[in-house]
Image (tube, rainbow, N blue to C red):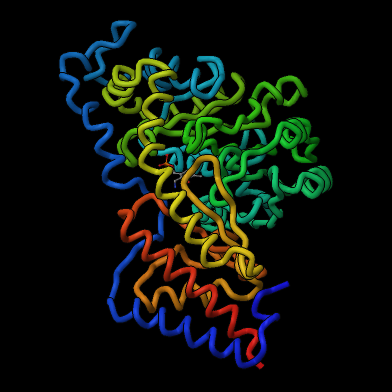
Length: 424
Ligand code: PMP
């Protein structure tokens, strides 16, 4: 039962007064705390500093003799392909090394489908309607790409082990205008969920009406564990091959939150046929991406074990922040049944659900006390959370002391907004 329902009218009033007192005490501090985006904090960026000390001379020649200071190499240096193929558990001929951003690769993949079609199919822009399935809450920038291109988005509920596959199977098998689905399959943004083997198998076995339907598998947090017992994600490309659907998935990842956001290396992986088809237009788009940065990453990490070791350093900084947020949420909100939240094993976010129709009010109240949260609703297509209850908490960037205050204020706001709903 919701805690405030159990209180007498007088007790509820007293409770609200006490919360308002705490809220105002924080407000008087005129704080400016920013928890809007999932950026690494300054100490995390320090970890990788040595990568930039690799002497220029060592960044010149690739293993096959390529001069990295010159033009050339469309799809990545062999050693970069080897490193990232190992990270994504795919073959080296199933990968393209891109530029500095996986979002850019995803955008380009949609833009290419819109203007040129997928593997000889009709360009999506020539069709009357194009729809995408959007498991939600999800990543706002995925949704923004669809919105920009006029792709209609259909909300799919998230369950404990991934998206609602019954809904996805039914919709894609019946509707030819559904051309894709967005997935963040590991430590999802924002729920922190890793898809179960069953969900991966059901994705791989989809039988879409549109033969140019593609799964956009954004594995942004594939190595971003917070615990020594990481979640395991089944390999979607292997599963698709086993199901006879090897062309159905595009996989994306980057080192943005491994090395440097905005100065990392992005990759995409897919079947050989998809990769070859993409390369045909990619070769018109660019002569090649930044090979010096590719080589820098390979020299620094060496292999996947190097990446795993490096990610432990990130986890050592992030785990105490996540633990602190979870402790405060439990202390302030535990047992009151006014909010629920996840305890992620990795990734960058904690996703919190308030009671229905409270999230926007909570975010507004927090903003007035100097705490900027990701806009309520942003985790849903068109920025519209149908039940106005989801808020994405991004604990990585603020220093610990700031984060502590911000979460305390946030938790007070949730209690205040919820309690006032029960005032008679
Ligand atoms: N995908 C997801 C799910 C993300 O959370 C982010 C970063 N917030 C990105 C992609 C962006 O990746 P990149 O920096 O490689 O463009």
